[in-house]
Length: 283
Image (cartoon, rainbow, N blue to C red; front, top):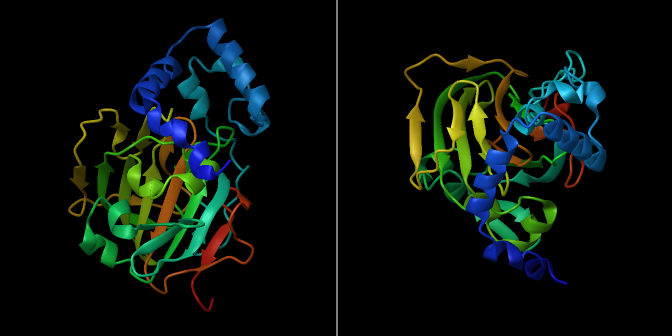
């Protein structure tokens, strides 16, 4: 069966309704039922609870608390690198941004402009630059951290679809990451401008940032923008910047000549928060 045929049912599913239902269930505090459900999830996906700041499953009052669990101090040391990996997950794709096009999967590209909510002026800052797309599976740690020091300039919530973002769907749905709902965060960094894009997906009930709190819901169907250029919101390398409810994908954009990805980084490679992702060219 081709990848496009395999994902055809996703076009027919009521993805928004399913995601709203999942969000309600994930926030429910059902005592022993919640604990039993989390225990089953941990067993099915092989979640390593020994890394959690709170390893006792019974401690989590709802699924959302479990999904966004903190890690024990020291379990993700930060590499000495210009940019570190911001999440636990697996590399979906990475490489050069060519003529405003980002490689998604064999036969599929999408535009930087579309990813960034249609802002061609912003997209031009990344013309000829570099991108990295990292997929977070259900078993992974779901908080997102800063790859490098950064000053927040603006944030956008871009409405969109809610397809799954797993590797099969990335191969089967054209322009997936520029079609799905997403939160675009723009930073000024020592490496130049950096966009960190949180991509939503089916069953991902919400996305949140540390400076704003929950961004979605609400889902208004309209692009929403927050400007922070006149504020001094700074985050250090390795600091938490946001989180997903369940798994999803992050897309990182850097300007031309800003970074050179670490040797060995390639599609499907498992990665962990804090490991070296990129250096300055020639470093």
